[in-house]
Length: 297
Picture 1: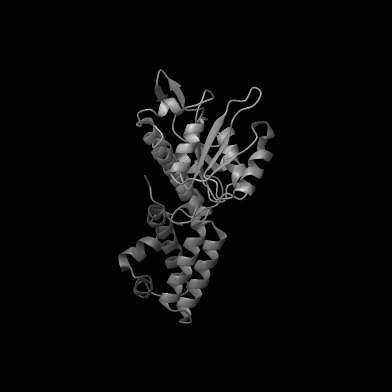
Picture 2: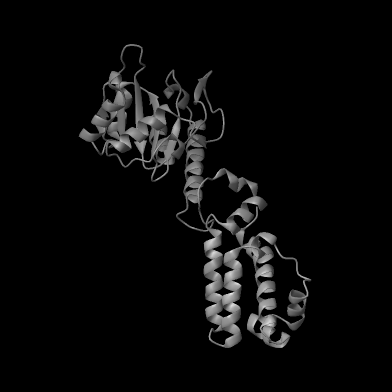
């Protein structure tokens, strides 16, 4: 595990201070004056200006870094800029470079698992896709473990298999839905999970969830189980809202059922020609969906 702060400390700061110290010296300031402005020792300044501190080429050659160094050097040397203002300007640049930019790229190179996440994000942004994605995966993981350890869950798995899925808040397609690759199957009376949750590996259950959301549901998670009128009644007894849809109506039927009953927690179809009857439990998250299903086992 490598923190982006380590990249800032180990690569950005030495490079930035080296460039700024050299700039200030070129403007006629003494080593003592440069040391005071940068808050470092004179010996450190000497190492900076004599090239004894290793610089990161990507940072040293970045136009934005060099432009800021020149601006801060001019401001600090003339007295028109305070140390606090210079610090604020540098911090702003650091934060911008952390968001899908130079520092984020260096962080990804130093910690390859980050390469799995597309798009721009700041690693410490509480609303970043990375964080919400990891939370969704963790939720599915916890829910699946709960179902695996529930005696009797295997008997609730339909012939087509079950899946437990959770969508990102702004999910647009199955790539934004975490699920179990393949399906959870009943193997000799035991629920068998083929692998750890991933994004984009469920079409059916994820598709039902996305369709329900498009129809007005605010559910973020779903799990499918076998259909039985008694199971539907048991879910209703828990206080859950149910809605039936036509098995042969496809996604339109799901969307219409949710539009008619927007607070539905349970969607079900009783089968059709070549179509197995199935119940879909919708919930705020995967753990809650698993808890509701566990109460039926």
